[in-house]
Image (cartoon, rainbow, N blue to C red; front, side, top):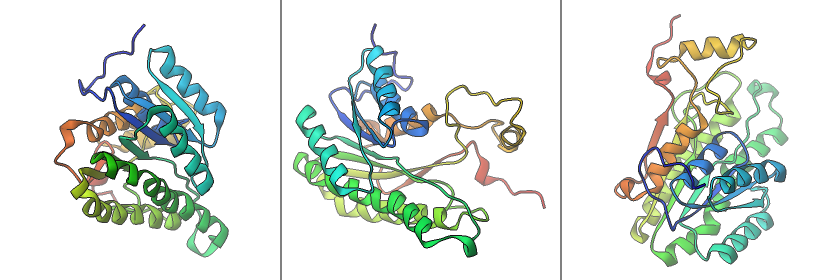
Length: 263
């Protein structure tokens, strides 16, 4: 049985893509959509069992995928990731910097250790993974780098989210500056800024979870987003259809940030 048809009609056949944090949530959604578009997918993350589950999903549908356990806060792990990809596929066409963490606390209560862990994962990890693949993409004279940022930090904020917001704001600046640095090599760099996205793909909210139900109703489109919908956007940014787009941030949030909240 072959892979189901890619919903966008975009083709990534013959291309190789790395998705960090690919074992669950948005990362899993992107990995599945890449595979459905024909790409060979490398799923990286800290939990091997989760990575293996995504790889099994892709392979059961006729796709080609590889799991590489990776902590993006460790340069040795990143080096091993890139070596594994080059050994298996000989090229890297797409890098999706999706791995990230969040910890919410009032600024006065945020410890240095927690702040540094958020920064090391969300910003430094994104930087280091990108630095590891850029020489390969320059040699190929082509590539797509897609940073998974957030509406939180670059555009809006919430109380208690200072460290997370700062890290994602840094990803925005990194995206724009890197796009200028790499444009001459045919490499595009863009960011996806999700709003409220479900971790699973059911599209339903448990009756018991009143907070999520209330949140979903407050979004103009009336629901939370799905990981595969972020994946659809990533496929577009990875495809030839986006060749003239670089250094930009695209919001996917059901219209949530455009509305003025009631007092």
